[in-house]
Image: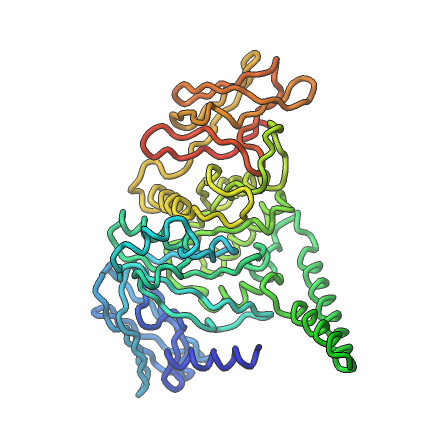
Length: 494
């Protein structure tokens, strides 16, 4: 596979290079540059002068001893009109055509970020809309790497139209479409994701250096990778002497699955799919992942927290990082008032990250999801809610984008009173609440809403209250008003 990939890399690189002058793959035809200022980078002859121009915006730099150059175009204003991005050095010149300026966002994570519009409930509506050259998506080639690489292995900017949209990341596209409708600017979406991957695969080596709970974690990762490599060598030795065709085929399949580079390997997606565009200019990140980490929900606080901080460190600044709090999944258990599994706890960890990691935010999706499919098809509200958070927190054009949050919970006699940060209403007969009685048994609670408060009763002198605390819970609390955003899971004692 690797020789074929190398050939593909050479083919792709030829599209954005001229002799020694080479651009990162993101600076190709139909690219979207971040409004305000945007870095443009690549490689040239060491010590050579490099000029960069997009219309009236110009910059000139000198390539370093390693040939790497990085120029910054300042004063870029949003524009729907495509312009040539021209990079020149000596007698070499590279031109990326039809480049526009707008808001650039990154979409990353695992399969639910990968999930395409083609497999969503809103497909028919998406393809019925006219083409929109102001929405463009670049899908980074899914190529993990054992070591950091310099350039993206493949990908191209694709304009949104009825023929291309079905292949777009659904969460990213619906996010970008809603964002564009509100800010009235072009939106560029860079999607870098692989199904089934854990958060550990998306950060660099050493990302846990400042995390006490992660003591020796890097060493354990290294030991695990060495053991995998050793086992692969043993398999390869057996393949070399195996004569039976059936047994040989089985050994080759096992070896292919145990390759030294795999998409869930520690740091490998960072190396191959993030590192090549470190320093690229964008506004923020949307993140849909966590399913593969649900077995260790408490550790997710520092795993994803450290990963976000490592991205900020690599870029030298904090930027918005909006997390999709996981929707419902797995069979509902109607006989249980509370189900204390990994999914409610990882949702809580996501909320903790949003509260405690600089730049982190979350969108709540607890009323979405499917019992028997970890890939829910209702991605339209997922994308829209991500945009609502961005519009409230990043662009300041919306007052309510985040979901209602519990500000205070207190026991009052035989009731628990939850006070939210804004008025809420109850749907679904107020279902989804559980109360812990004096006998340490959970019972279903009955809820009533009054403005911003919800009063939950059902047992004498309750010790705790929980809401939507299950893998696939009943949901009833929504913000009052037309937006009707669902409140997230909650427990009074952690």
